[in-house]
Image (cartoon, rainbow, N blue to C red):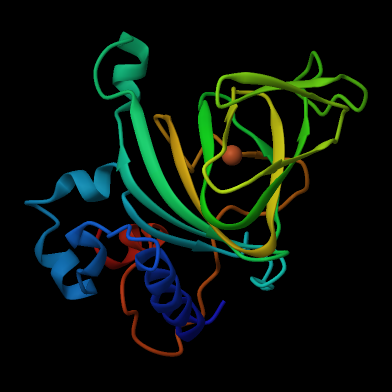
Length: 228
Ligand SMILES: [Fe+2]
């Protein structure tokens, strides 16, 4: 994906998020130079991989296959092992109308996926089989705001604004927006996007960036190369 496209998606996404009254934290607006200057004093941003994450899953067709994410907070994996401490994470995301986030599951992370406004959020769901793969037959059973919803394997769960679903580790899910773009909230246990996304199809997790202009803001996947 071209950097100019990423910059435009960030600007449009920021306006969309603000239109719902959600305001991003100040570090969202740091320039790449600010980020370099704050590497030492704001280590938590970098170590917890907070910030912008515009992904086309490495496939170069963002409008059809992609997701806008911003990690607002993220806990510590060591605390998960201890069973006490900062065990939680939060993201704000935008899935565009008919833009697919591809079928995947998590090994560690439990997540609530919340429709925070816009169109309908549609999730395609499968339970895992004994090896963790997709069970093509098992009935899907997931809590929607505390009430169990049962669906056939591969059934579509449609969430209206305000509704949310809890996805425990192992549950396979793909999602997209129907009717209008959707602002999604994610509240989860500690998030590690480097290791905890298992995709059904062989795709990447981050975008390959073609540098055709200067970055407005760095992506999480830029930190290592740009900031160190
Ligand atoms: Fe997920």
